[in-house]
Structure formats: C-alpha cells, structure tokens
Length: 344
Image 1 (cartoon, rainbow, N blue to C red):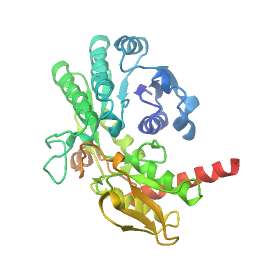
Image 2: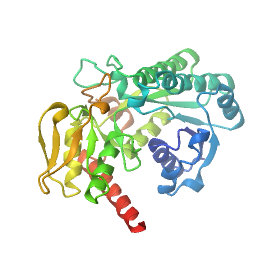
Image 3: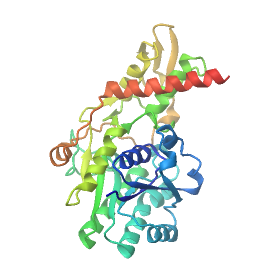
Image 4: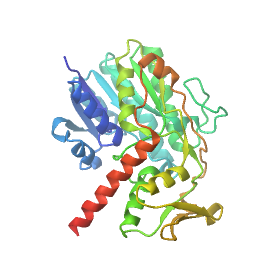
C-alpha cells in the first residue's frame, strides 16, 4: 500500500526527481512550495508528473503555516528539501538563509513532535558543511568546518535532526549529499551556468562565460541517482545519517573543458589569476573569462566524499559517471537553445 509523502521544496531539482521516484513506487505525493514559487513548477512539467502531484503552500519561515499543514494532511514521510540553497547568495542574506535553511527545519521537527511523532523525517544536509576540513575524503565521522552562512545554516538543521532523533525517538535522518547536478539544475548554479552559457555562445546569443575560482574541486554526481539514496535512507528500520557521493572529484576548469567539447569547442587557457582566459582553439576567440565578483568571501577548495556506509548498508551507488553527467546537461541545454531559436 502506498504512503503519503510530503516534499518541501518540490519545485527544485531534487524535489522533482524525488517526486517522480515516489510516484513510481505507488505513493501519493504532496508538494510544499513557497507562495512566490508556486508558478515555478516547470521541473515537474518536464518530468511529466505535474498533474500527479498535489501542491500546497508551505512557508519555512512561518511556524503556524507549517503546523497547520502537518496537522491537516495525513503524512507518513516528510522530506525537507526546501532551503535558501545558493551558497553565494548566503553571504548577502545570512540572516534569511539561517532562518529558512536552518531554523526552518527546526520548525518542522517541532511540529512533528507536537502533532505526530510517527512521521518519518528526512533532512537535506550538505557537503558544504565540511568546509575546510583537514581530511582528504569526508564521511559521516569527519569534523565540520563550514565556510559560508549557507553551510552554517545547514549544520544547524543537521544537528537539530540528530537531536530530535536522540531526544524524542523520531525517525529522523540526514543525507549529507555531495554536489549532484542534472539538466533540471537552476541556472544560477555553476554547472548549469556553464552548459547553458556555452550553448548560447555556440549559437551566437552570448559572447563570454564569466566565472570565479575555476580551480575548486567538487565531487559531482547525478541528482536522479542521489534521490534514490534519499528514499533508501527512509526505508531503513533504524534512522541514521549517510553521505552520498561519487568518490571522484573534478575542478570547475575540467567541467568547462569537458562541456566545451560537446559544443565543438577546444578550450585552452592563457594567463593566470583574474587575468586568465579560456580560448577556443577552433575559432581563436576568448569564450571564458574570470571575474572577481564571482569569488566568494570564503571558499571551499576541495570536497571529496566517502559513501562507503551508504554503499554497504543501503546498497546505494551512483550509476551516472561525471562524463555522462556533463554530456546529459550539455545535450539538454543545446536542445533548449535550438528550440528557442526556432521560436525567433
């Protein structure tokens, strides 16, 4: 028999992929969105599931709204994916980020404790919490050293989840997910910015892709793989926290080079620091430049996840490689630009 599954932040990349997975498993899916995001359900549309999901208003900043929603709807599993999730923006809006990303999860947990402590709860934690940790690879036992207001807020919600599990016996789990991307990623995130900008450059709708620090290393995987791990955590008999990661990392520079090949570019680099340029050897044009404004006040230079626990206990593993992920995103954005050009 299917369950009633509630996803906060269903309008986002992970929310859409998770909703599709839960529906495929015979569950009813209710999606919570901010009132201002109610018109941004294009990802559900793209996956062909928009009409299969019930949408309700869900405001992480408003305890009474959260409380009434959980009280009114019969929920078996609640997946909290909503947050102010853009790391760079968190430096400009630290208080709002802390309230939504950090305290928002606490509001949900307290509502569950008061209304129905049998509701299973998933918290979307983040590899950004590790920050400048000293270890080469990060797992569930690695010390945290957050380097942004976003990471600090995620750490608040992460420890609140653990506290409610240990203090009140709630089935509450955290998934510490390393970077996971897809064609449904928002344009403000660097991976999607890269593939979309290069597609625009190829078709003459943009001249240059501007980036910040291109030497930071990230452990990238496919979001569709990672939501399967999220679901698996919630099906376990005993709640626990898990790292999900590919175990391989690449620089933003390498992502740009790999994506470029799918558009017929052969990118080589000249110069150093903010003077560095990415030049397409085919056309001899500068198509990538470095802009100081895209540097963060404090950056995380190297993240590499160790998902041994998830692989051994959950049987989870990624199925899409880095090369396949980049190809998937490049192909999707090329089709989007070609479709746009036909409408001109």
